[in-house]
Length: 185
Ligand code: SF4
Image 1 (tube, rainbow, N blue to C red):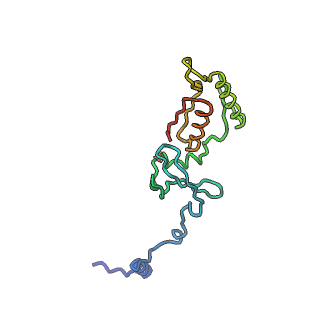
Image 2 (image 1 turned 135 degrees about the horizontal axis):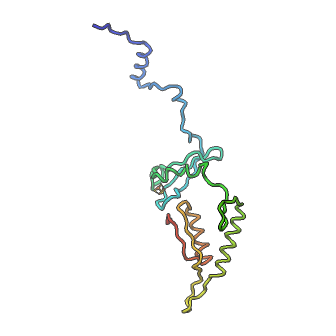
Image 3 (image 1 turned 45 degrees about the vertical axis):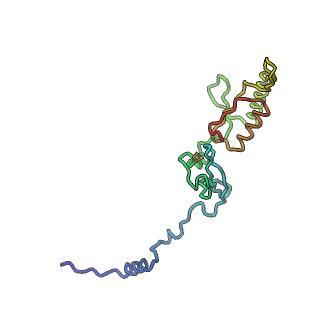
């Protein structure tokens, strides 16, 4: 018959603490905190699709440190689909392009250009194309004020405000008819 082991007094004392609802939590565990603690919360909208799930963007020292679903949203109640959950990686990513790259016709390489150069190129090309193709009236006399030579295809990462400006400027302002967006927000 095996001898009965003496209970270790330290373990016994801890078990009594547990029994009295004092949980065995280490100092390290006590000092752990979510990395978003103390961060500024900026409310935003997932840019990926027309469901428009609400996001909490956590910012510390001017840097986005995390993006999660907003639990107070009546749309998504804090949840995000796999695409929406990847918003942080889309925003904070060393592979993200942060410079304008231009490949000239027939060229085999990209050139880094300034944003001012790119904006000027776009403005000049849009103006030239519109000037050359703008139609005020059809042959039967109907007024159309449009150009069919320019189209806009937006991506789902355009937000609501950007799409509003695109629709207002391109359609009402420039007479561009073909405006499409994957997200359809
Ligand atoms: S992509 Fe997903 S998370 Fe984003 S708005 Fe659509 S359903 Fe919501």
